[in-house]
Each structure stands twice: as structure tokens, then as C-alpha cells.
Length: 260
Ligand SMILES: [Zn+2]
Image (cartoon, rainbow, N blue to C red; front, top):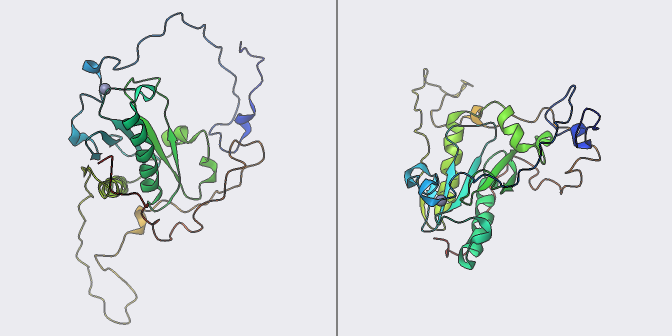
């Protein structure tokens, strides 16, 4: 049992651990004999089953993907759900196989976004009964965010600009729709601005209204420090992309089949 003498675990000294200062381990509560029901154990009370398609970013016959209700600190956080009121261990073979395809497809879609280095895929299932897989994008160059604590950092980092958030959701929805289903998320309306001056040759200023706005891109790395040994991800494979500005990853060679 934890007490004031319980030593802090090694992970509190990892570079990726988001907190510092004096800490102590919480006392461990006694186990309960019978666990309380999760949210939505009954389909009639299930939030996922009762949420209409237009609140998702992409839908298909058997699967749906939704974002959060507002921007958070990471460039992309989405949840994959099956339409059927099932948890992961109860999926029939068809849905189990499609879960694999959808997981790979969604990971690839999110990783194709500018400034995304890695996509963490998680299923906890302790809160809600209906299967929901989390996909969290780790910003390129942010080595301190690697590994276990990414979900904590999502709440700590300042929220990304809403325009970027909407663009990212629309990009992922459009990617998924290439293989079937229907994109719901739409890109934000372009803020057309008339140039205040007309630029001629020799004028270095460029106020072209169609120029991409780099200000909405993720901030460049400025605190990237390789993790020391002992970090969970110290042996992680090298970054898959040497340059965050390189072209988007090619589309995956999936056939245009299920899940559609
Ligand atoms: Zn449900």
C-alpha cells in the first residue's frame, strides 16, 4: 500500500513526465466488491448510440469518427466508434477485422497532417461501455511529449487555433471518405482579405490573399531534448519523417472495400 514512504517511481524523472516539484504517491483505495456500471452499459442510455451523425466528422455504414467539442493542445484527438453497441471483446469477426483496417487507415490519415510525428492509439474503456478507440497526434519535434503522458500534455498545452483544428478534422474526414463513407467535417471558410496595397515588381511585400498562413502551423520545436535512458520510449524507432514540411505521406494502398 502506498504511504508517505512509498518511493516515487522512475517515470516521475523521465523527461516526458509533465510535473515537477514535491510529490508523493496517493494512498491506494480499498478495492470494491462489485464495480459500478460504466456510462452507457445499456444502449438506451448510451451517449454514442444516441448521438446523431452530424456530430461526427466522418461516418460509414458501421463506423463513425468524432472529434472533441473544442480544440485541445494536440493537433488531432479523435475517437473511432463502431455503430453497434458493443465493446472491443464482443465484436463479431467482421467488425473485428474492420477495426484493424480502420485503425490503420485513421492512423495514416492523422499522420499525414502537417506537423504530426506520431499517432497514439489507445483503448481504455473504463468510462463508457460503447467501444471507443482514441487517436492522439503527437506534434513533430516535441520529443518531450513522447510516450505515456501524451494525454496529460493534451490538457496542459494551450489549445491549437480553431481554424487549424477545423482544417485538420476536415482533412482526416476527407481522407477517410476516399475509401468510403461520408465526410461530415468541412474545412473552415477561407478568410479572404483584400490586399491593402498592390505590389509591383521590386516590392518585397507579399500580401497575396491565397498565400498559406504559416501562423496556424504547429510551433517549431524549441525545446526538443532527447530523452535519457530509462524513458519508456528511449528505444523508440527514429522519426519516420525527417522534415515536418515534407509532402504529405502517400495514400495507403488499401483497396476501396470495407468498411465503406
Ligand atoms: Zn452504444
